[in-house]
Image 1 (cartoon, one colour):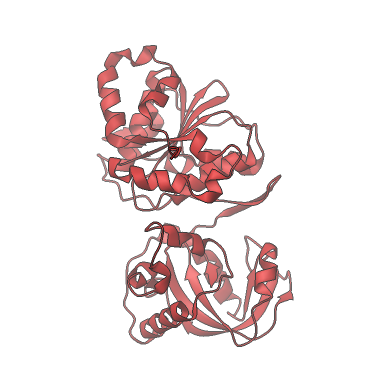
Image 2 (spheres, rainbow, N blue to C red):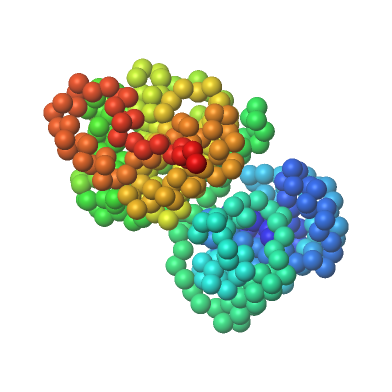
Amino acid sequence: MDLFTGTTWDEFLAHGANVSGFRERRRRTAEQIQPGDCLLCYLTGISRFVGVIEVKSKCYEDKTPIWQGEVFPCRFKVELVHKLTPDTAVPITELRDKLPMFRKLKSPHAWTGFFRGSPAEFSKEDAEMIVAAIKDADVHPVAREYDERQYTRRPKVYETKVGVVTVPENDAAEPAAETTGSPHDEIQYLLLKLGSDMGLDVWVARNDRGRQFNGTAFQSIPNMRDELPRQFDEATNRTIELIDVLWLQGDAIVAAFEVEHTTAIYSGLLRMSDLVSMQPNIKLDLYMVAPDDRGEKVFNEINRPTSAKLKPPLPQICRFIPYSKLKKEILQIGSKVKYLKPDFIKEVAESCEPLDD
């Protein structure tokens, strides 16, 4: 597998589609690739297979600029065998019922971990089915709509004290109506207004600042911060800026909320995991806010091995708030909200720590 964003795929094509590359930390895996092997090209933003390239050389090092965002020095000479367009590319979701890699998963979404780093080796059966689907799409193209924002996004990569960190952007949000807003917007609004009504400063993710709910612009909420305290390194600051909602007292962040309404909850969890990895001594409460029926999914994802092994473990500091419980609590509080302290939200939230046997 060879992962691309829409941007790096366009840059690959613009350079002649004859050189592909990987990050330095993937060198050991890259060196196992041999001439004659095929790389299946996968677009991460829109989750589609867009082409097949044949490897024409052994791995070599080269830092000649090809991609604007990163160097990808572990390179190969390649030949583009099959090329699709973003709208005719094959969605991974359309292959789920056919590919062996989707069978016997511990959770329905566990497959996404495989698609977070490349190169990665498919099984022979999976690879043959994927190549067949790409070939068929090349001969019989079917146009499908895709999110242009997700296609063109460029994840930012930073050097930090824990190594190279890619700061994940928000998942594609569902379209919002002009005046009412989406369920995601509603929960964001309720959290922002709740914090503001308690007398706290509030922050909404930088890329959500233009959003609104029921005709009320997020920017118009009292105590909305225009800037955050710059007390960490660039990667940490960038991660914090993309968290859905923050409550602040002075320059101290007292609570961070990720609202996860749609199918993928990984961008919010990755932001929280990265934050704990980069700043293990940071003191703030983390919350995942999601529909009631997604509680089990949130619990399972927060308890993934990579999260549970953080110091401190993510399940110890991240809690779950169901939509209905948040709305009910806000309704019951009413005008008493101004007397509350931010710690009260812990009583609303549910622990994500596994119970002892």
